[in-house]
Amino acid sequence: MDQLAEELTVSRETIRRDLVGLDELGRIQKFHGGAKLRSIAATEMGGEGPFAARMAENLPAKRQIAKAAASLLSPGDSLFIDTGTTTVLFAEAIAGLSGLTVITNSIRIASLVSAGGENKVFLIGGAFSMDASETVGSLAVEQIGRFRARHAFLTVGAIDGTGLLDFDEAETQIARAMIERVETVTVLADASKFNKRGIFEVTGWDQIGRLVTDTEPPPNITQAIEAAGASSIITTRY
Image (cartoon, rainbow, N blue to C red):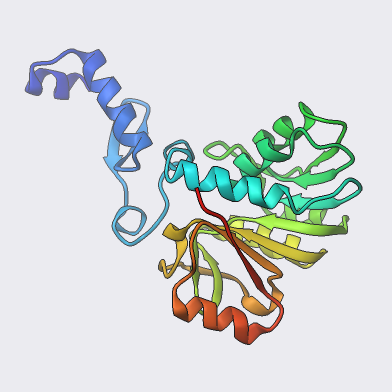
C-alpha cells in the first residue's frame, strides 16, 4: 500500500479504503499488506462476489420473495434453511412467527430467528466460513443427517432447465444434504439466477416442490418444471 500511495500521490488511508471497496465488489481479494485480482472464474464467468456485496443486489425482489415464502409456513413446521442472501431476508420475514423449528448452518439466520418469536433453532456445526458466516464441510453434512424436517428453504447460484446449480462445492454439499432429509424443497431465487452458468449440480427439478421468484421463468425452465411433474412456481411482484 505504501508503494501505491507514493505512485498515486494519495494517502495510505485512501488506498486502504479503495482496496476495501474493490474487495467488497468482488474485483480484488484483499489480504494483509496488499491485494490481488480475483480469478476470471469468479469475476467474469458468472461467479458470485462477496456475501456483503450480494446482499445489496436485487434487494426489493429478494424481500418480496422472502415475504411470499414466509407465508407458506404454519406453527409446528420444521425447516432447514441454507446460507444465502435471500434466505437471510427470509429469516427476517419469519422472525415474527412462532412455533417453528429451524435448522441452519448460518449464524446470521440462527440469530435472526432466535431474536424473533418463540421458535426453536438448531445451529449446525462444522468448518467456519467467514465471508457468509456459515458452517460447511463433512462435520456439517454429518450433523444435518441427524435431523428430519418437513421443509427445506434453499437459495442457489444458478437455475437452468436441468435444475439447480451453484458455484461453491461446500455449499452445494450442504444443500444436497438438506434436500435428502425433508418432505418438500422450496427454492428462493430472483430472476438474475435464471439460465446463469453454474459449476456444481445441486439437484434436478424432480426433487423441487416449489420455486418462489419475482418474475415468470424463461420458457426452458418453465417447461422443465412442468415436465418434472412435482414442482410449482410462485411468482411475486414488487
